[in-house]
Length: 342
Ligand SMILES: C=CC1=C(C)c2cc3[nH]c(cc4nc(cc5[nH]c(cc1n2)c(C)c5CCC(=O)O)C(CCC(=O)O)=C4C)c(C)c3C=C
Ligand SMILES: [Fe+2]
Ligand SMILES: [Fe+2]
Picture 1 (cartoon, rainbow, N blue to C red):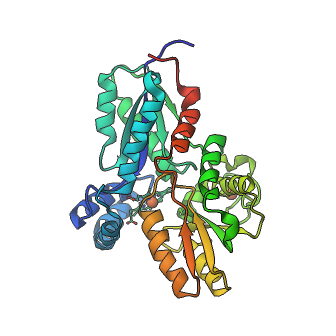
Picture 2: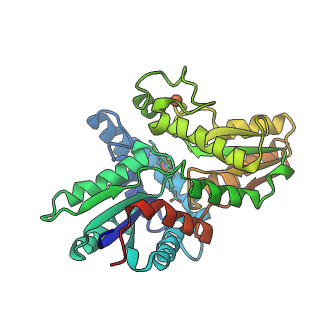
Picture 3: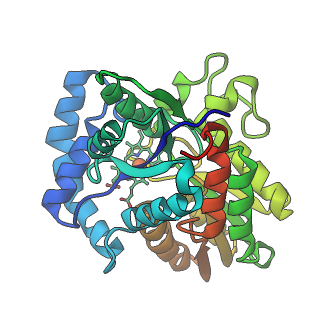
């Protein structure tokens, strides 16, 4: 194999610079003005996002970010930095590892300007979302390509566009879940970040989301259907853990409206509490680092609701974060894109 100078750029969604209304407003505004996130007619998006959603959501989100913040800052940023340095150590001279956020800081522009100065032969874009969605991996890959296409010398460009089915990712997540002894819980909930139904329909060329059977098997076109890959991830994890149908369920969280993917995780947990489940384990395999959506939304808000409605214990599985097993898995996922040491 020839020697190539390779840059890997890890990309997560982003997080505000600080838990203040001003910083959260700036972050939400960049996020929600993305055409791949809010995919409605442009004028409507501008009005809806800038005059209604951001002004109303920013104060509410700020309170949540204040609960999330630790002395190390935002967990998403902290773990992204730890993973970057851990992966760099592991890859050694095989590649230089950069990290950026799609929205906010550290910016993709800053990482790419260092990559441009470094004259790399090859750039590998590695969005940190196991299941492809246009609003996550799609926008991250597009943002990098949009900038690189203006360079005088365009390097080789590769993208890991998803890795939900990579055995190294699945084994690392299964090991994490196993450490909580799932057999000791009444039920295991696999909770994925939701999407508007409209986004799903776009990836259903043959069938509507209401008639498709992707909850039980991966359809042929389903590799890029976020719903299908979430269910497939669950089946793979459940089989590694020896969980039987009925011992676990799949649901979707973080909706911004009721026209998002169902079933909703809060309603799933509420029903289970009312039906007598006392002790549930919640896993969130759409995230590789803990963030607002895992720690606060599930770990605090849903937990409170579950206990108020008759449940006794809701245990959130810690995300992969900076675990050595995950960093080794990342190296395996990247192996096809890496040349010899430079
Ligand atoms: C699989 C991961 C994610 C998908 C898919 C996704 C889609 C998506 N998200 C929003 C709106 C918001 N997301 C927010 C935060 C946020 N979302 C993800 C992951 C996915 N989003 C992460 C990792 C985070 C960051 C959390 C952190 O700790 O900083 C927010 C901001 C927080 C809030 O106000 O709730 C919004 C808003 C949409 C509209 C969407 C798909 C269309
Ligand atoms: Fe989100
Ligand atoms: Fe489907």
